[in-house]
Length: 285
Image 1 (cartoon, rainbow, N blue to C red):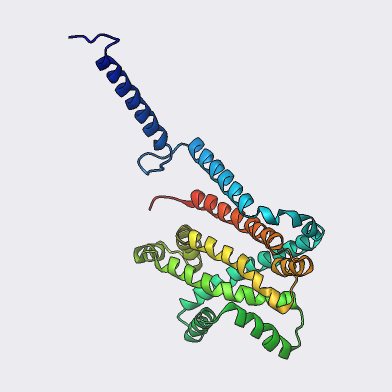
Image 2 (image 1 turned 45 degrees about the horizontal axis):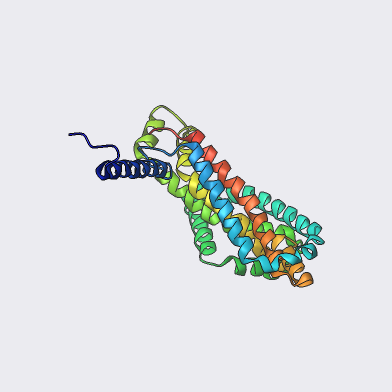
């Protein structure tokens, strides 16, 4: 039996269908906000989500700190100080990244050496450095060891201490990656006549690189952030520059916000680069 289009029952049915369509449309739209392994979110949904969140968070920050927005012109006068501090941090971080990687690989291989003096020297280095705070190492390294040796180059001492500190953690990451490789692969490499150096270069290190890229990326980012502690020995890096600007202008928010942004300009590209490198070396085992 058909209902009259103008009857109350027909109107109720139309409203029910309309509300059901709205619910279905809302549910389809909400599906794009979820990124599941079996159904990944489309690229445009990720892009829109990031842009929307940035807009919301930026508006929130502007509203919360709106009373402090009148002092930017004072900080702008010290832009050269920020730039010089940022460049100094870049130099320190670049040198320390290379040196810490060298120290880390050397210590990891030394810990696997059958030569006991070399092995226990590496163990002593790694465990001692990991058990001490970086601030102590910076102060002791410059005002203690370097002062006794007559070495007054603050930059070089700071880079060396930072490299030794980060190298101890990198050594443990690499050692764990090496030990994660199955014993059968070592035996297979020996069976086909590979030397120990060839075994590490052709068999072990490619797999270690895959296993250790995420923790190494985190350690390298931490190294860049840890360079901020070098201001305590008078190195004019980025944090030292922000403190100088804050002392001169009494604009704490405006002095330290660029500090955080400048560190993100260093750490985020490093993180993105390591992720792209991780995708390139990924393979099925």
